[in-house]
Picture 1 (cartoon, one colour):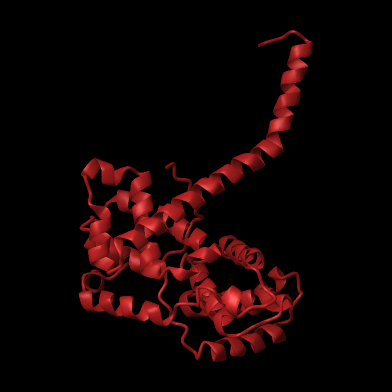
Picture 2 (cartoon, rainbow, N blue to C red; picture 1 turned 135 degrees about the vertical axis):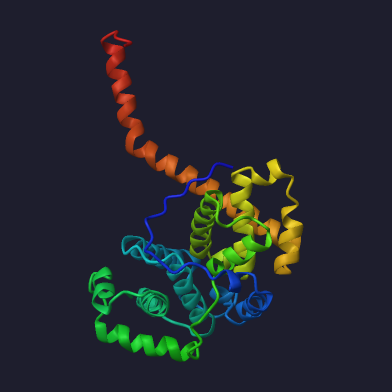
Length: 285
């Protein structure tokens, strides 16, 4: 599987604390906490009557674009999507309010994890002023109320370094930085796809690592029994991890095909016309 990652330059953030990364008590607490902040995997069927997966994708893709343009830290986006899914799991809304909810989730997640959070005025501008700052602040209180102020959710990004440490990979090597970058791309893509709502962050993190190592052919070179080790580390079933990895790789392949189709639509016909012009002049140079 070829890997295609288009990460933007990230802001400077604090280095991971080695003592915490190696502490099993911290890691086990994270595994327990992630289940508390899981959305209902079928909320678009059982709770929401005016929303569809395509509508969710439109708004989530827009949230992704905002984070990309503002060069937010990578965990801002999946955390905001977690808020969105958890809110929609318990509270039905009209589709006209979906972008307002997505904007609110971005505001809260950036406040929690960014040193320089997204401003209300900036987010209102990104909606083409279809909402007001008063609407956004009112929905911020509504979101916090629905989530019962439990906004310190665990994301797949939080698990990456802990899992890599337990795979006995030297996190100081440049190769690991490449793996992390690929995993960041996969995690962002998973957050944009509704079918990944049923997977806990630790599974998405483990499957992303497996997909990255598979694409880089690390497991084949080092004879790595990767899924058995991921099962021991995360406690997730091997079948679940493999299924999630296969979904990620299929999603990446689909994304690459779509890009090629778009490029062909944009440039293919131009090239065809050039070839036709060359034929009429009998010039093959």
